[in-house]
Image (cartoon, rainbow, N blue to C red; front, side, top):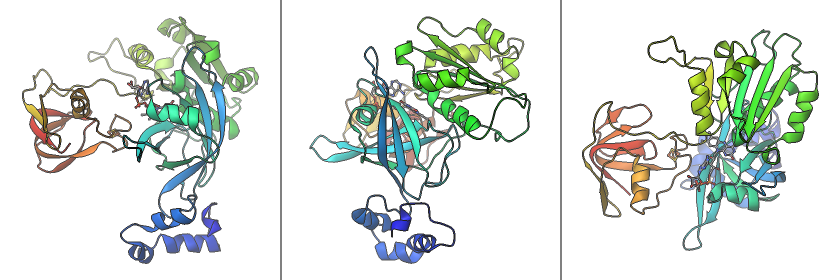
Length: 392
Ligand SMILES: Cc1cc2nc3c(=O)[nH]c(=O)nc-3n(C[C@H](O)[C@H](O)[C@H](O)COP(=O)(O)OP(=O)(O)OC[C@H]3O[C@@H](n4cnc5c(N)ncnc54)[C@H](O)[C@@H]3O)c2cc1C
Ligand code: FES
């Protein structure tokens, strides 16, 4: 059994036990609870399908005396972890006390801050505790070695496009703000770990914005990277040193044709997007070289272009109703005082999935409308496009 805790060696006994536990026979024998429910009772780090992790250590990155503190958690995942590509994120589920003292699982997305990991290997998350933030505050302030977390596999396409070994003369550019540094740090750490030294002609420019030097995450490591002869230029900007296209052009003259990864607060993202928009193009075309990752959803509304929304939203279980405004159904429910479960609030974790029994809704990300009855929808990225009934 213990072979399940560490990555099973192909062809070894642990591998066979793993295959057996993942088989249809095992699934049938464990019905209705599933194999993992039984394994978890013996040892929370035993799993055949699910991914869980134990916190190995907690490192305080910033004290947060004048802002929200940041901590890096090192996690040992179960052997079911398939590893991650630099830049990907993971969904983290934690059990927090509910209204009647009963534990309730809350799920949030976090980018992985360590270099790309192999199956079963340890990795890190670097998390800023938001003042009112349930999950981030718990992970930064209360998690300790031994704390158990529920995980998804790594996901997301905000990743390096080439391996460090790929011969190329392209320059790479990372522009990040605040805790948005985490996926970029994973990419830079991967490049450096895997032997990138800048001497192949490819330079890396890392431009980061933080509130103050005290608030700077990974400060010591960034200073070491900046001082080393490795082809990585690190530029740290604080407080009122805001992003400017003029400065970016000075650092990377052909930035619009440079592979760029951008992750940070909405204000920074808007300024960078403006800089990457071709002024010559009629439709204001954004350079395809710019890749973006969002930690918070952009505000989206559901009306068809140029249209107004008319209709009533009925939350059938609670009996609450409200006029459709174009805001997401999650926001409309919260405005009425309802507390539906949510995770990422941007359509990636499925925690907010509810049944729409009738009516027309629009996906605020794609603009697609749907009037199918008894449809499963993610209410964080769905808005009413007319009358609709939601099982909430
Ligand atoms: C793909 C992805 C990767 C992410 N990676 C990281 C990461 O590496 N490190 C990290 O610290 N966070 C990261 N986040 C943000 C994280 O998922 C949570 O949104 C954040 O930690 C707040 O969750 P909470 O439960 O503490 O707050 P909640 O209880 O959900 O919200 C409480 C309050 O905080 C505000 N709030 C919620 N989310 C944010 C946010 N992202 N920024 C500012 N205010 C917010 C809300 O408006 C609300 O007022 C990532 C998000 C996504 C989608
Ligand atoms: S909250 Fe994550 S998909 Fe809706």
